Image (cartoon, rainbow, N blue to C red; front, side, top):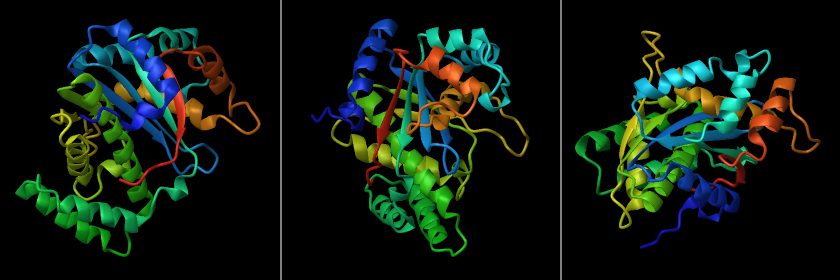
Length: 281
């Protein structure tokens, strides 16, 4: 069986993950993945962050994060010592922040149309999924679609499914709960992203592992209920820092970003940053 994954080639990630596994042993059969993104801000780096931790009930995890990280990074005037200590020492969490160096080369809508055509031909689709893909195919033919949102969706699908591939192939994962940032990509075409992710995971893991059960925590925007906000706050802070780093001249956008970078992120054995060239699906 092919045990190589997309993340196998990133040496720093592999070395830090090996140490992380020892801290949390025995390894769980289920994981939580929390994610946040900074994309298309001309003053910042394009970046996607995933924070991973062993499966635990949300009513245990959310209160901890709400207490330890009470604010998103944009709402912090100054970073407290408690926030820095939590980010530095909270051993159950492992974070990978992915810099997208040349986002314009991700692929255009024509590439996405090819993806959908290939997905539609998958023998594993049920009738409901087939109907959804046909509907999305028609949606992509419209003239007024938001190209940036669709390109971002394609990128997020690519990265998240590679996280699933890694956890499934390397650790026999049975279940993954994903808590994504509230973003327009989650709402396109009746949340087609959920079908796209399941289909992509099935294709990636075919003949290697049984795809894990995926449960996605979605917010109720109509009612204004955002119970998963605390779960996104950890990757939100890392994304805020990484997206603000001036890699050419050094330094960060604001003092709070510098404090977090120096005191919580650099040399943290459970936080790694890598730069990738996005591959076609």
